[in-house]
Amino acid sequence: MSKKIDNCRKMESEALLVTDTARWSAARVRKSDLTRQRILESLEELLRTSSIDELSVNEIAAAAGVRRTGFYFYFPSKAVAVATLLDELYDETFTGASQFMTRSNDPTVALRAAFENLWALWQRHRPLMLAVLDARATDREAAEIWERWLERFVAPVAEVVSIDRSAGVAAPGPEPALLLRPLLSMNERSLERLLRTGGTAEQVAAELDALAVIWSRTLYGGGQNS
Image (cartoon, rainbow, N blue to C red; front, side):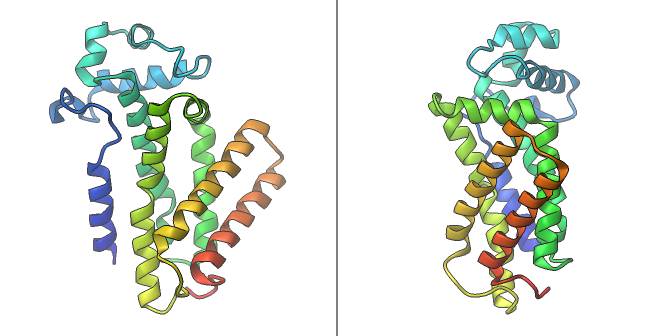
C-alpha cells in the first residue's frame, strides 16, 4: 500500500504549481540553496503586511538581499514563488497525516490527529494562507494556484480510501475523489474561518472534532474499524 501511495504522491509532486517553467531549471530549484530559501522566507514575511498583489518583485528581492535578476534566477514570476511556498506545505501536511496515510490508527482518530497538525501548520503560516485566500477572489492566477494545490491532495488520499475499500475497512460508495473534493473545501472554509475569527482552544478542538467525524463517516461509514 505504501508503495502505491508513494508513487501517487511522486506523480503529484512532479506536477509543480507553476505558470511558467521554461526558465526554472532543476539546478535552480534546489531546496538546499540558501539564497532561494531566503527569497521564500522574505516573501512570506512581507505577506504579513502586504497582499500578494501589492508586493513587487523588487520589494521581495530587496528584503532577501538580492537583485531583481537574482529573484528571477530562481523564480520566473511572483506567482511561482507563492506556489513554491504552498508546495513546501504540501509535504508538511502529509507528514502530519502519517497515521491516516499508513492506516496505523482508527480512521477517526487518525483524521483528528491529521487535522490537529493541519491547523497548527495553517497557524504557523497564517499570512501566506490568508494572502492566497484573499487574492484568489480577484486574481485568476492566484485562484488557479490554490485550486491546483488543493487538487494535489485528492489522488493520494483517494488511493488510501480505495485500498481500505478493497480490504473491507471503508464503506462502498461514490468514487473517493468525488467525495474528497467537497471534504477538502469544507476544511478550507473551516480553517479559514478559524484563522480570521480566532476562538478558544475548546472551540478549535470542537471544530476539528467535527471535521474528523464528518470525514470518517463520509469515507468509512463511521470509521470505527481500523
